Image (tube, rainbow, N blue to C red; front, side, top):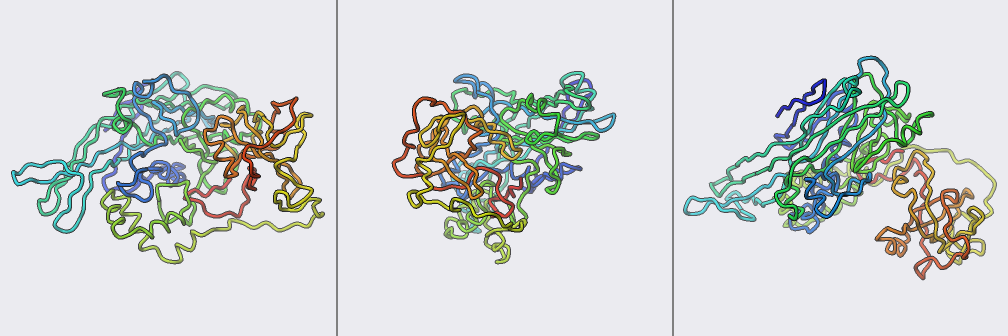
Length: 520
C-alpha cells in the first residue's frame, strides 16, 4: 500500500509485509547498523518461553509499544505521559536533536510495528462445510492450532528539513485489513488468517534551537476507534500497533545523544519531550561519541549504540533474559511440549530447530564473554575489608551505619528524595528523579566510596525488593534527606539486607545477558 503524505513537501509512505516469515532488513545506510536491535525490539514479547499456546503468559502478550485506539485507552481517563513504553497508549512521541552538516538536509523516518493476525483452524465436515476448531491433526501427523500471530509493518517517510521547518508534515501509517486461506493436507480442513484494519498517522515537524541544531518531533498516533470501548484488551489489540518503534536518519545530518549530550547542548536536550518511547543513538559499537548517524526510538530503555551480543545465535523473543538459560530450558521441553510449541507458531518452531541443532561450541559461547581486560593497579591497602557481612566486622554495619547528607545523618530507615546526577550511562535515572524513597543500608565499596541502597516509595513491589535485597543505589550527593529531625530507624525487613552490586556502570568484562550486549 502506498500513501501520499501531507505537508508542503509530500512524502511516500510504504507499508511492507513479510511474505516468508523472515525478519525485515532495515536496509539503507545507517539504518542497517541498527537492524538487528530493531528486529529484537519488534519481536520482544511476541511469543514467550515455553513458546506454547497453553502457557498462561502467552495469553497476555505484547506489553511494549502498544498503541491502541484512543477511545479504548481513555475509557477511564487520559493517559499519563512518560517514557515507559510498557504502558498502553494511543500515541508515541519522539523528540531528538539533529545537527545539520550541509545544505539541503533530508530527514528519513521509519515507523515499524506488528499488526495482529488471527489464525483460525477450520475442520472440513462430512457436509462439505468448514467449522472453526481449536486444533486439528492432519493425515501426515501435523497438528495445527488456532492462535494469534502478527505481521510486521514498516512505514517510510521522507521530507527535506526545510519543509519540516515550515510546518508539520504527515503521512498515513496504518495497515489494511486482509484475509488469506491456506488448505491443509488431505482435505482435512483449512487455516484462515484475518487481519483488521489499523488506522494510524505519523507527523513530523522541526524547529531551530541553536546554530545548525534543530529539535525534531516524530509523533505516531492510532487514529482508529474501538468497536467497543469496554472490550477486552485482547480484542482491542486487533486494531493496535504492536511493539511500535521509530528509526530516524537522514542525509546531511547527525543526531545528538540525549543520554550524554555534547557541551553546550544540555539545555536543549532537557527541552526534548519523549512520551512512551525514548531515542538513543545507533551506529557502530566502537563509536562512543555524543553524535550518531541514526536514532532508534524504542519503548524499551536502551543505552546509546545498543548491540546484539555476537554470541547470540538467534532471537528468543525475550531480549532481557539470558540466552543460556532460555536455551537450556528449551532443550528440556518434553517431546509433547515441543510438538505443541511447533504447532503454536512458526517462530516457535524456528527456535526449537535452532536449539535442537545447536553445535556444542555455539552453546559454550553463551556461558559468558570477556570484552576487554584492564591491568590491575597496586594501591594502598584499604582501611576496610573488600567484602562485608552483617555483624561480621566491627567496622561495618550496613543496616545501622549512617552517612552525613546536607548535615543530616542518613542511614537505614531514613526517607529521602532521589536526585540522580546524569553520568551518561543510565537512562532509568529519568524515571527516578524526584521520587521519594526509604534507605535500607549504607554500603562501603572497595575503593572507599559510599552508596546508599534504597527502595522507591511508590514502587508496588518495594516490600518484595526489600525482602530479596534488590535495591537502587545512589551516592550521598544524589539524595535529599526528608527526615531532618528524627534519627534513622529500622530498615524495613527484620533480617539484614543482602549485599548487591552498586548501581554505577558495569565493568567491561561481564557475562552475555540476553541478546543485547549491554555496552555503555
